Length: 113
Length: 113
Image (cartoon, rainbow over all chains, first blue to last red; front, side, top):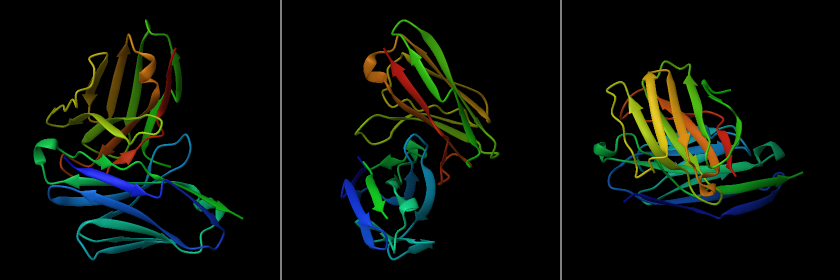
């Protein structure tokens, strides 16, 4: 069974203080690893998809990286508007499970001005 | 803003009520999903629908009944729910079955009294 563990559960940052979020996973044949951002009371907003170890993707102050066992979401010089819960999910190669995403518990990020 | 809409955004119901949640996607996608997000638990996949009418029920209680009349609309019919069913119910869609990125709606916050 696919499993995803995110750490830390919560992260408090000062504006401009860079940091990294971790997503550790076990999956039977990784088809894709996904990062989403979720604001309170809203649905997850898609950020990135990573497919293979060594791949990196960037969007504004966010950069996602992938190894064979984990992914990192780096937040560079964060601003208060980066405050949100960041979710990691994996999709395995079991096609009988369809397009099932297995999610981690998320990391709540609070950026203080 | 996403191309997936959900109504109502908030719903309070008694244990003996019958209600329905509605989801509509405007992205031209062919697969739609229902997820449940409970407090302090990761998102859980409930149902999957695709053009091929494949339905995946991940051991969801029969008091939840999905309906997908076409590729743009998805319903979740609720009856005789329990207080532990209170959660954020999220709808998502993707381009096709087995295709990667899922896009989420804003969710329906359900409270069962």
